[in-house]
Length: 125
Image (cartoon, rainbow, N blue to C red; front, side):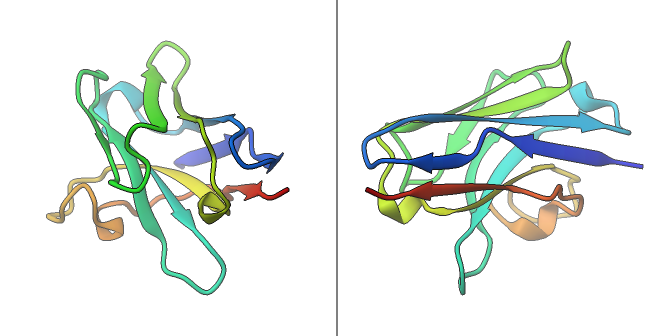
């Protein structure tokens, strides 16, 4: 079965950086676009970033453009999210997911139906 293991979260001060990793198994990783989403307490899960199957195209939410970058290593079945200049409003649980092509936009959580346990990112002084 598909398994996703996010890691790299933690507590960081505003302006700091973190690099999240997501190791995938149980699927042909290089065949799937991948996405990162986040969910803050009391809020819906929201799109953060996506990357094409071979990494040549990336997409970022407006709220993170210029601060975050998504990348992947298909030899390691891993997708990354580099987060710089972190803000308190970035505090959330971050999830990665393969895009399943269910007919929705890449920005829509409904186009992704496998999720890991997530990794907590807390930005606070």
